[in-house]
Length: 370
Image 1 (tube, rainbow, N blue to C red):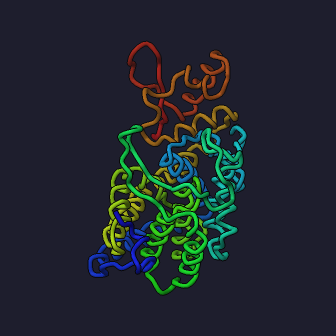
Image 2 (image 1 turned 180 degrees about the vertical axis):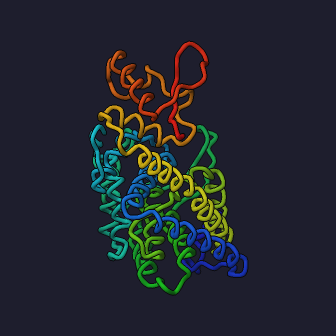
Image 3 (image 1 turned 120 degrees about the vertical axis):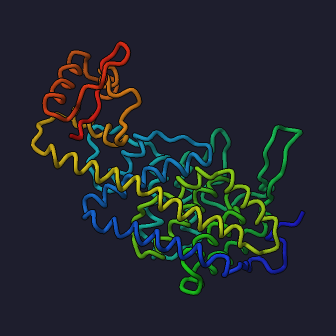
């Protein structure tokens, strides 16, 4: 088996522009529609939308790699870095802060030169303990001499899907990648360039761990350069995770090819468009939340009540499964049951909550949208 990087033309990649043109056009229409909606939100709501998307991006890019971050820790890190209220949120941990810092650096500082030192700094930020799970890894350095293989299956029945270039070739491979990144901006259509950057980087696989997360951060960086915006309003990682099986399948097929990346770019452009479409949910959530608070701007709530109402708003119109109950209120606020019952009753009296139709033994509540 020969991989794409073993062919003499590598890292030259070719694609069928006629097949991709309709997909690029559709992606651009969706992109323009979303950015138009974001401009209409105003500064504060756009900033809240950015925070929501950044939280989702951090969670989903980690889930793809089999790592589950705590949502509240991610919210805390994002809020503090964006200057948003963080009252009631727990302290964030180092791993979460590192990932959020990488994602923000990639987009906020998208015009800064991309260098080997910057990439190594990103990888070091992801693994501040120098461990990946229980395995000690090289941090802030290209990977070591052992082969980098992507395998699946139990020991003795493993299937090898891909083997990356050997460690001895990494310095040269990364010099070519960084030269490609710096030299082709404006020469290649922006969305296609983002897809190529992702594929090129994960094919080299230069680190012991963190390659996928850094590849997705680089993709966001390329998209930020293309849009001339330092903020993301859609989560590509969310959509990649939703299509994870197809992502790995087309990646493997293309990496085993001879340099034609049309199939990969077809999938990437479609995934990008679907990520844009999914972002409408984020925007709708933000506008619904803003309208709700505008309708109740005179309500005098304590911090516990405001936290619970915001949590309900963040779940959307459907609210919590089974509705809000006294038990759930206690769990979220650490209030006593007596206090929880009284504060819920106040929210009902002010018109923020309504009592759901009786089901089962516990009374439940949902937001009252009027």
